[in-house]
Image 1: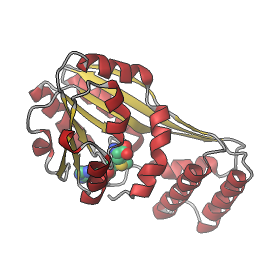
Image 2: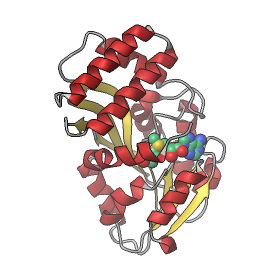
Image 3: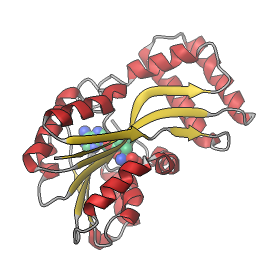
Image 4: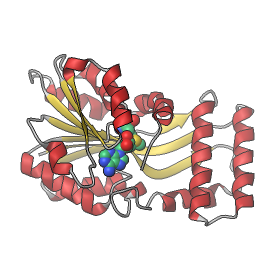
Length: 262
Ligand SMILES: C[S@@+](CC[C@H](N)C(=O)[O-])C[C@H]1O[C@@H](n2cnc3c(N)ncnc32)[C@H](O)[C@@H]1O
């Protein structure tokens, strides 16, 4: 599945605000005494996790960014200090072991675990266990999507979005809104100590561009699923766009962050 750099740039400030501060502090505390630790970020995109985590980590932290999309990684490498960032173009569905190769102190990801399958998550938990590697997974969508000034089609629309979340994104049937819960279960099953906390987006009326992109993406997902009529979807989209343009819409999107230690 491909993601545009424009979408990743649009969501990054909301992601940065939403990351669970307690978990971030615990990740930072774990690495505080490590000289030049290495973090491998899975599904790194343009390097959002680096920008969120680097200010909290030791100055000489090195980054190994893994993604299937070479063009996103190319952007990450020109935005970040060259001597501390290595990029690896890999398909994580097939090449997870290669992605985890080498000396690593932390494995991270953001907005990835809703795309993966239960089998893949189980394999990741086992691979982390075999290497005794801690894991920080931020911003996994958990199925909660609330919009102010209710519209009669909200529930059906969000239900369709959540069903669409389970369609294959390249890893087999996707966990979608069950991603964080499945990660916690699989990581606990291999004996890790797991903490989790909410990292919801709260999109105020002044975040109109992100709100519009979200509403458009949800309408497209509902249309692809075919559970609502095109007329209903367009009515809902137009009503939500009107509220955005009137500056009256607030959207909360539920996310969960997870930090797991062997
Ligand atoms: C929602 S984006 C998140 C990107 C980044 N972590 C962030 O928070 O901005 C998901 C990322 O996973 C990558 N991805 C999806 N499927 C992949 C696969 N099979 N192998 C490697 N990367 C993949 C996409 O290219 C994309 O960069």
